[in-house]
Length: 390
Image 1: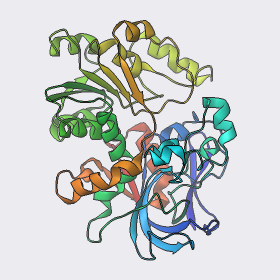
Image 2 (image 1 turned 120 degrees about the vertical axis):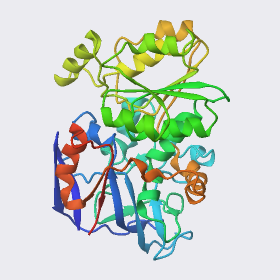
Image 3 (image 1 turned 180 degrees about the vertical axis):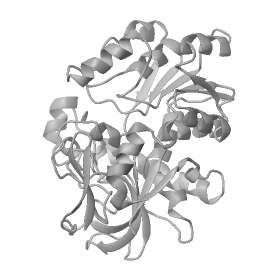
């Protein structure tokens, strides 16, 4: 089969690799109809996530048709159309029973490495390094899905992939980010980053009762989409002092909650941002927490910092004194996608939201090297790339 394979930093290639096989009784084989490049895939592309190996198959946002099931898979049948969540949950450990699927104790076969790095391993994830299990990803013609009794969501025929694909990750991720804010009716929410997750966080904040959402970015087309489609007030951080503007817009109090939808590769305009970019470039730092630092400084006293943006290691010069003095609550982590998929699917089917609004490029899987470069460099007004097998 064809698959998008990691070759090194800023190098991906479409290669011929062996077709996946059923290995365990709870496996399923999916013929992939659509897949996407996620913002967190760029952390792999840029070389910031450890334990990638040459030839690893990328991709954790995918959907398709069930072609084969193991003998213990009872909830799926051949021919079912499914969306696959990016985090793999076993369904029966302490965390899965609490519907905290991204914390699964059993789905990461390489958990010793993650235990050493993070204290405890989270779930295995598709296409996201051997730190998270080394599972082949979904930017391919076929994928093996472990624990298929728990993960894939059967979706109805007749609804185009473009409306359903993002149930695999970014729609639930934006929704959980807003949910973590404990939004009360009338709240003002600030969102750093108007990429796909940030845009879904904006829409989700309004769905959950926010009165205002203020979105921060520098890319004109992203800011335009946040304002025009998602109805946010927007700030271009290259053209204003974000902290001053947020104080003015909130009457001096600050946003009730702040969402960092950027993560480890944030950009900025001040000295610290340039300093951190240099340190990361020469491998003296793992993360550039520009957006997170600003969110902490901006948030009102007693507010919440919600972090769907991925961080990989250790953060320098964080204003923990400000976080302590203001009594901030932090909520973060990989998304428990399986928990939210059914309700969000109902929302799509009822017409409450059409997630396809953010797709700017619909390409063939063979175009993956160009697609990664396009997305990483934000060329041609690129906000979200999906790829199909033709």
